[in-house]
Amino acid sequence: MSKIDHSLFSAHEHALEHTFGDCPECGSHLHIRNSKSGPFIGCSAYPKCDFSKPLHDQQTTTLKEIAGALCPQCGHTLAIKKGRYGMFIGCTAFPQCHHIEPIKKQEDTQFLCPQCKTGHIIERTNKYGKRFYACNHYPKCKYVINSPPVAGTCPECGWALLIAKKGKVCCPQPTCDFQVDP
Image (cartoon, rainbow, N blue to C red):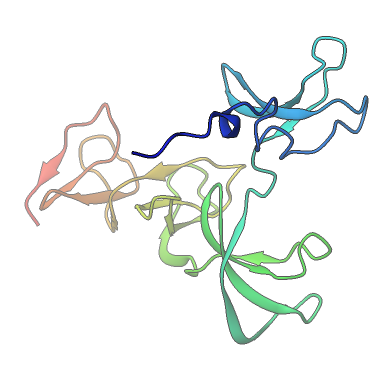
């Protein structure tokens, strides 16, 4: 039977204790701390030194560079990236160049916005990939519907746009109950 070498377990410092380096303000060691909003990197000399930084500095990750696609602003390669609001196409020269564009172009439905009467309803996608329809004059006009728009005026309330929902044509106004089979 082999004996366990207990000297291996008698180290005074943990191997990952100094992974995050030293505090730029006071020189003490940085380590992971917790708060009500989640983990972060903080100074071990707290409360004397209140230096902290986010645990994940890089909020955006590059998934794949797009061969042959160049940034119209600086000429660097474009890449598919994932950020806090979903996937998008962005310049690889970030942060020097801030060019971004959506992966899927917004499609105009050719319907006039019934709220502001100047914008058009466009198809958009949220960060989870779900489609919705909104006025292209956002943020001035915040009109949004979750179902595809249909041409027509509601005969009950007079709203200038109808929607297709659950196999029926409906009025999008919450106070109106108009529904008809297409």
